[in-house]
Length: 342
Image 1 (cartoon, rainbow, N blue to C red):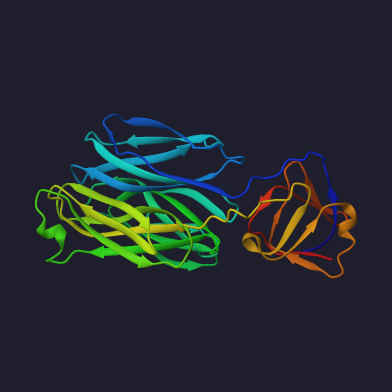
Image 2: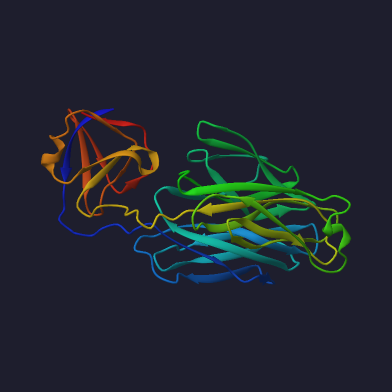
């Protein structure tokens, strides 16, 4: 689409926040009742409402009949609520990790599916997920990526699962470094050798980044035993990503998969100049950029400019005018269909 353009300015000097993130591993909780509400408060308030990526790092259930889910609600600049729901009589122990991000290069979504296939949009084909809810009565729970086509990920869910809920994070390859790690137990595996105690193994992989924020989640498990007990723990970075996965109390874990996400925060990236519209050649604020701060700037472009992401400061709007057609741009968009300014 080709547009000539005009900027309408409201003179309120208020800038967007810088990119910001905070993560936390919560203490394990045991659900005895049907619902438990947990209030989460950020260490320091955000200036803009963040998105919340949440993962499940521990599950302990006494039988293969299970039913639970976790909701993220009332997200604001100061915190949010976690709502744990249980759909069976037996107690369930869960542990979660969360990552709050204000970064328009990143998207978070929650999906609940009652079918064996789930199709979800992902950005730049760069994503990771964690189970945050499941209902069923089988020793196996899992979800696998079948294919990615035209920005959509096709996910296949274990047949025996009646309901599964996922938290999915996707976004720029400059910000997110995801990895799925499968495990399969052999006869000499410590999970098989260990009796009536914890049996954890360490794993690691190389990642050449600077000061990542790490978060991990459970994405698949298969047990021989009636009880289901699995935990991902001690995730850290020391020139490579390190973590541990395991089980305990004679729970016979046969197969598992976990996801690890490394998020790179760019503390020098200011989301917007408080007085100017910023247009970016590529999605996720990459490539060549131009700033338009007043109406006169619009006529000073010597050649056409194609853009696929933009930032319009708060309390301002950017109007694209093509004959009688007017398109208003407001806020932050990390990836749109290409727009051409002439």
